[in-house]
Image 1 (spheres, rainbow, N blue to C red):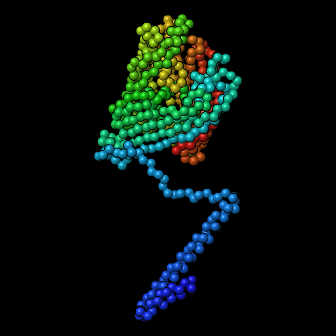
Image 2 (image 1 turned 90 degrees about the horizontal axis):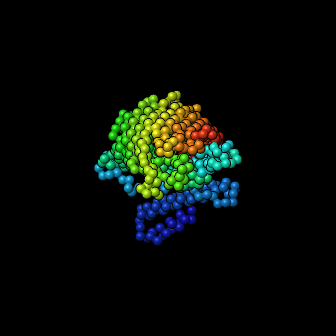
Length: 458
């Protein structure tokens, strides 16, 4: 560094000494000294960085001959853009426009002590338990292991301020499909709502998803109403914890031709459901500090026809109707009791499991079959991380005289679990389940299973 100093000084002073005054020479000397000082600081800084780099890399080199991993970037990733989710010009709360993404990855590991229909073995549906063996799907030697990721799902919600209010949309999928270990993207909800009007597919107004207990099993209590239905909905009143809503929903007809097959097998094979009019449903809901109560009523027309015959006859319609009452009662801390009661005729299409809407009577004329379903569950939180859910459910049908002896009469479902949430958005746990199917003639079959699940939400 001293050599550099004298070199700079010589260049500065030697070439211009004869033309400059002593004062000018002093100024140039000060500038040269400042330049040398800056160079010294820069060299020291570079030497320090050079020494620090090997020290940081030394432990990784000592452990493995593999190259050290690239440093994690703290820079923001590419922006996610939703070009159609911009608030309408002039809309209030325009800054609230947003799109939310959520979902979960879940593994269910199940051991069946008995057996169920293999097309439905990823969940316990009492109607899928074999009774008559050999013959019914699921007959065979007891004991089966099932691994399933079919509860994995992905969802999107959009919130778009407009001059008429907030436009909300909801689209989500899961991977549940019947048939062994099959997975397939299946639409759950495809729903849009603006003000009091809604349209698309979502939970029927005849059910209450908020009462679904904290179970690991996918299907849940068989005695509750559960269906996501295409519908048009209007909610004329929704204020102060009270709501009134009405919907026109996609109709369905679950038909059992029963003993018609003994008289005319071809005719029985040709009978299909006819859905001429949508189902009409009205709902009332009350939310308070103690929990909530909800009631819903339904009127529907269930039709049938025989398209292969002239005039599509035999054909006809029968009236269906139902009443659903359910709710939640908060007990101690986060604990709650959830319960549901539903009854009516021709409503099996809306039940979570089992039964038919129409079946032949003693004279082989179509009759709307009566259903009664219920469940009671208690969700208990031992701590903020540990919880349990225990309960019982049943769906019973009043069989007609024209149904065969093996027609579904009653399904019973019960479960108890222990769940642990070690960190936010992760749940692991085990569940013991029992289900039983009883047929019209009194024969029955049951199944006991244990399920372990690991769920990761985002």
